[in-house]
Image (cartoon, rainbow, N blue to C red; front, side, top):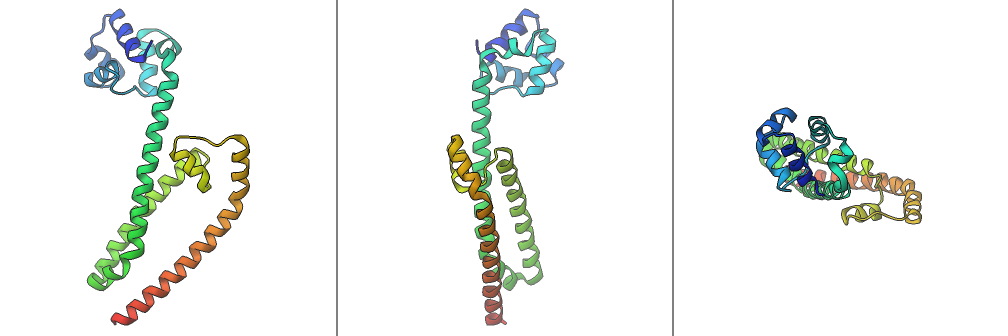
Length: 194
């Protein structure tokens, strides 16, 4: 039986309206309606509160929907990761392109604007790193598998973990080289326009 049917079944058995149930578990009536109509799923806190209100175990309340909920949550996580990655990529490209025009046009205000963009970029970089840590993904192959909704088998995972130290060293060296190149380009352009 699906969770939506379980919620409706237990709600009617306990003679509660959607409004009454909503009050007991601290959500809106519309939220209960959405759960019963399979528009979305309750969070863990709401499930625990419902199991207490209905006086049934969490297992009985949820039954066979655990896998479906896990898949939906994973799908939402993949979508968030991809959205954050896209935003970060756009910001990263903008951070490479806009510093000189901003400073040349607006001087200190342009620098302040650039620093704001940098702060936003760092915010998304930290969010991406949290996803990577949570799902233990570091290498390019692991990230691609994650965004495709797949996971690597044991042997592939071991190979990718073996690559991590080398990739980190290359990443540091590449970042340093990129920073030096950007600094040289910015210096040259600043000299041209001064």
